[in-house]
Length: 290
Image 1: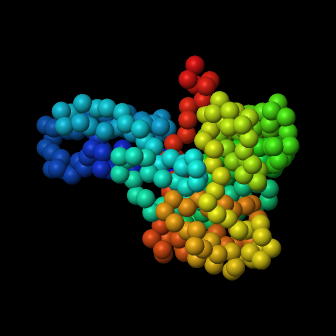
Image 2: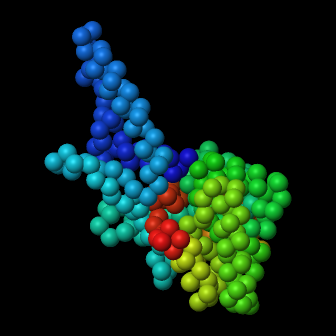
Image 3: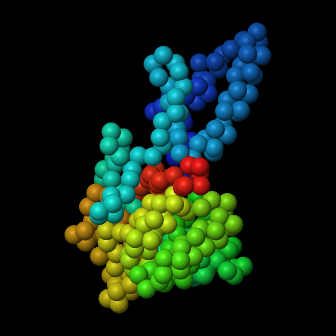
């Protein structure tokens, strides 16, 4: 939903495209022009699928009329702070926040996704492969994905990566990518290590897999004092760590589900745009590059 909405908006918005202009001026075309008008409508219909195919590029028209391709990504993950920042010269709005939910789909992820969809709010759901073994887990992931949400990799078993061999870390990461791809048709573009514990091996594997590493800037819902909706809303919206590019860590929990709508409203009331993950850059995988 969010990927498609952005791409369609990009095609028909400020970037002037052939086929996206208003046809109002032709409303009074006489019968002699009917055939030409029909042809123009057919051309517009033929151009519509372009939006769904353009995952990483958007079209723009230069002054001389030539159509060129430009990167659709407007943001990137700061490698030091994990904040979401505008790509240089992108002109993107800096006052944004990103919603992310870990440990999905454990029990409440679909409900959270439905709440976010009702508020037209994008997010990343970071999944553990172990929850995708059952039929119910597969169906839950498929539902979340088909609603338009980005799917991230949170390893297979939520293991502490520093405690594993490089080979075991690779299995934790790549097995989840394969499970996600088998269900959705796409491999994750973002990786979040359990407990935020990245290693040299996880860095290398993520790069090979074409995933951007993404920890967070703040989160509270695992702490006992914030395991109720009211307290969680207050801390997530009023914390001193809410700044431009805030990367909010939350989890697949009932109290987080109950707090999600008010967190969204509170962030927007403070002037924050909730950034679509489709606009955040990720590296190209080695397999794709080859």
